[in-house]
Length: 190
Image (cartoon, rainbow, N blue to C red; front, side, top):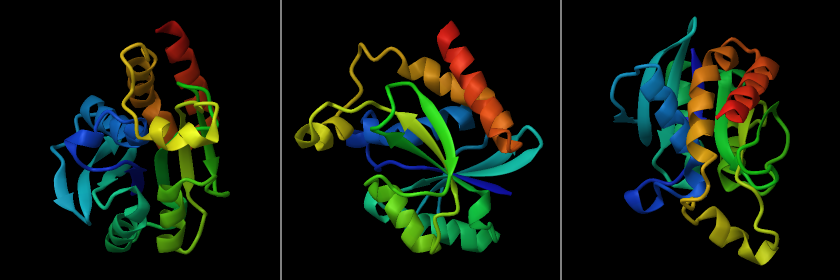
């Protein structure tokens, strides 16, 4: 079983914030692949189903971003999922809006959700789907940008989320490069 973790903050006041793009991605994947309704479990919300040939547990930690690792560790321990089978879906300031990159391991680039996952799992050996939200250009504006809602003119968001869900079977098969290529092609067509 794979564990895909969307990073975000709980509550309707955070639902449309850039920091919650990980939650948004998992919501679209669950909808597209007809997963059952979300349920409260492991200090978060979970749903499980098949994507391609893989069984995937989706998790949205409800512990707030800075304590995401608690929910991830609980789900991984219960299902005996190794860190190598975990993928975090998160916002990325250092990528242009709508761009994605998949990587395994590495640093956190100041992302508190990733930092807490590394703490809780005692390793950085998990994959990340980095979802570009762009940088506001000034370090002093980063918090407001990340915690700000997506603007109506950010029309790239819906096509990106749909493309992620469409290409998800490639990621579930471990074909990261094909996944990134497919998402890029689909978002160009949108």
